[in-house]
Length: 185
Length: 319
Image (cartoon, rainbow over all chains, first blue to last red; front, top):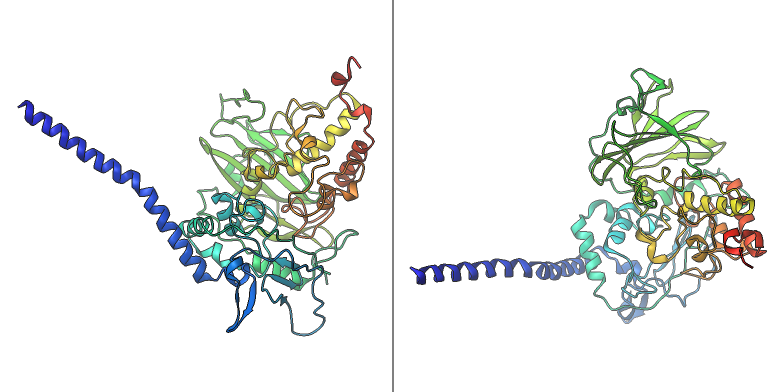
């Protein structure tokens, strides 16, 4: 009888440890999944189209892999919006695709790498999600500017946005201080 | 034709520019609407059928430092559930009983909107705003995304009713949901005149900036804390002084406040702008507050003079 009791307790202990062990490992697995999904989303919705500086290669222009998602290069100094004048044209982009000039002035794409001083290093997940949801800087500040599309914040789920944030924490940090927007002429 | 009025400091934004900007800034649909009353008359502000007569238990109040709202005439009320009281044991963060309701009315010649806060469960607040009908008999729940240009605050300058997300930008960023009813906002003015002047400037920054620029909310990493605390009384240790005077901007060249030089101070520059990318506050206003700007300019000039009168008497004793 005593032996049976010991065996039962031992089995219960093993069962409990399995259950608890599984529960503890879940967040780790989920984090990996989240980073993978974030990578998939970032690559699919085209964040690098504007947030990585483009360079000319043998097959034409492409985002510079060495400066992936590091925003408008600080050494490409732009001091005023382009004067477009009369006619059908409404906006213009730099050759890097990282500076955009239009009636709102000039917008520069943000450094999305985890660099603590010039990137998203000190941004919290909540701030990142709020920025896309509210289309405001850090979720509560000035409006985000064209050509940043509002549909990501309108249509992606919280889990999607958190996945993008999780992936952006894993890319190499690039020190690049993007200038503040320029006012219209 | 400019959609936003030109003033002497900010260039106008053309219709096309603003349309593009707004197209890009279209807010995402806010979270599912809580169960909010459809009409202001259902919130318990006034007696049924008589918006001119407050309901029993509703008390008017006025904060000492006022948020600029493009010149709107504002009235405010609070109602606590019967038999309850505010927990003021922490003077920096009063705790309001569940069931607390607050209202704030905005008027330009006639009532335009009344905003409503309700503490519905411990730590959970509802935010809503109600648009007054032309006949002034009642007000209806505003759309969740707000209403742009519901009226003009002055000729050519639209007055916007904020959406629910914009409510949270200020009321959910560190100082707690209730901003105008606090120990600082209900305290007396210092008797010492120079101190009162500094306190007025710091109070202005508290009321207009500190709901985001504080040491508790998402922008705490900037290290700019414009919150006025009950014990400050204009002392040189006020966070607004230690984190603004002579402190460089985190991004780009410039200094938050250059003592003696308002026009060189980023705080003044941002207040003087109504360009959407530069203006401060970033929402809730489309017009520069000229008197507020002058108040801050006068304070910045006084800080540059190192006016001994600005040193609180309690600190100068024994010199």
